[in-house]
Length: 268
Image (cartoon, rainbow, N blue to C red; front, side):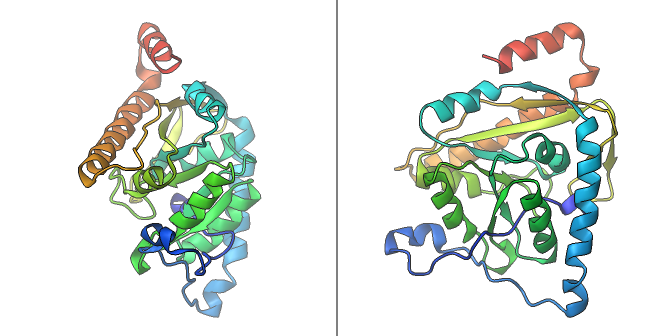
């Protein structure tokens, strides 16, 4: 169940009294929590506590090497915030590395989302709730407001349940609405367990593993973008996600010279 960890839940429900101009963002979103049996409800705090304990124990042992973070610093310096997009597989190492920064993460309204919301918030993240299976994506309205308030937002872009490595359109829609750029990244480890029986091939680093995070340059979506431009930007995001994934996951098998070339590329 840890493998479905990060597609999250909202700080508060979307205000239905918002003006009509928000309708394009709100239209496809449903933030209502599904009814759960009492036997499921009582599991939520116990599962959340167990998952948090694993992350809190493992996280301090990981040794991070980060390249390309300067892209985010430049976006922030320009007065904009970042819309992060990453594959569901690398949830654990990223939530530990970027804990306590208040980043708002899109979260499913299903059972998994209700316990992952607790874990995320204990790690210092915010949450925006939307269910793609029940009308989905109303959480974008929450995220748009948080960006305006000066907070970054993030998507586990192939979550909550796949298909694996197929990017959903949420970040591009949000970038067009807000003018904030999309930044994609991926993580590689030198030692870890890949759970191939999970839909996302969930990655759990081993204790004391080395971890590399690679951040790609920002992708801007014009606020007046046509459908064709939006489609092209979505394809660009998909391509960048695949590129950084391939480099990060092969990082520790590269020669020193190859890693030096990639460091220079990402740290421009």
